[in-house]
Image (cartoon, rainbow, N blue to C red; front, side, top):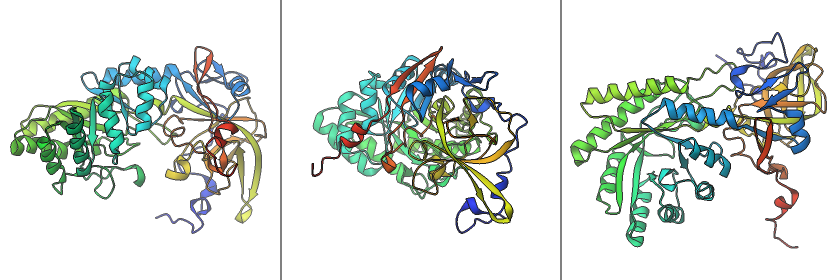
Length: 468
């Protein structure tokens, strides 16, 4: 049994040794390929390039911190899901990361798009994304958001409550429109992930419970609403999930409800959405499945349950987001202060401070997430030193990488790059301490182009309208 120190995990016994999965590298400059996008490489001088663009050159032009998105890698991952799940509806989960360019890439790669707010829907509309291929999520969609979805012709709305069913029914009656919906259900599955990203257990805000009968009642109410067409059920068990066992339990329970609706309500629903949450490698401890393996396992699970129930398989869909964009992006920082800190027993921890932090990657503070990093601008022959990469914000928990072996000569002015920052880092970015959110720079074939520009002080002050 492990015990957390009352001052936090960073002070616990053994924390200085790092986690058990972290091994001292034989070459501290080498990349761990599974953590990086496909085009990432280092030359003999230790300079890291992505998409054929050296990161020192990119940093000189665009500044740091900066998110670097490997377009070719992103498109390849999107295509891998499209091909592996042929016959499925594959919806890119825009909440992971979305901008107009990415929405267009998704369209060009033949994927559909999930949004979960009016803002994300506005991005999709601006990008010219076909609205009939958009799904609209959210546990508390406003009347205005639902009205917009009906106006632009969103292909499917995933309803999440009795209140939403009532709002949608009233809007369709008022506007003379119709809506195709799926009902988000909670299957009571405890996914092996962080509490805040496990979304199918009963005690949380999403969905309608199967076990309580709420999901069946929701189906009854939707079927009774003249302006709403019930297309199927939706189940999402969480995020950053590696094992298919959770999907198996959830699919069994959702398909039983699917069969119950056919038997008791007389309607065979044509669709079922298995959700997303497929994990990626943030560090060497992670071992994600390929899209082909996921497709084989999920299809076998559903086919087996359908055979046991004696029903036909509904048309299936999935929602990968992190698994597409997560590994396709890295973040480049400039080192500022390097501070050796004396600890009990004569130990020393090296704190490496960078020019970003929890304003551009809050996942370490929010989810206790693990990341890796590497020196990006030069090669070093110094011995590896167990280091902690921290940000510049006024928070002790402002940590980017909890534990990593870095060269012992890392100093101010060096560049560090953190892989696998595509999912939720820019989406969750903030102006904490009035920080300016970094740019997103796409790289491909030796060319870098800005997708989202860096915020300016003028942007920051533009909303401050008090007492001028």
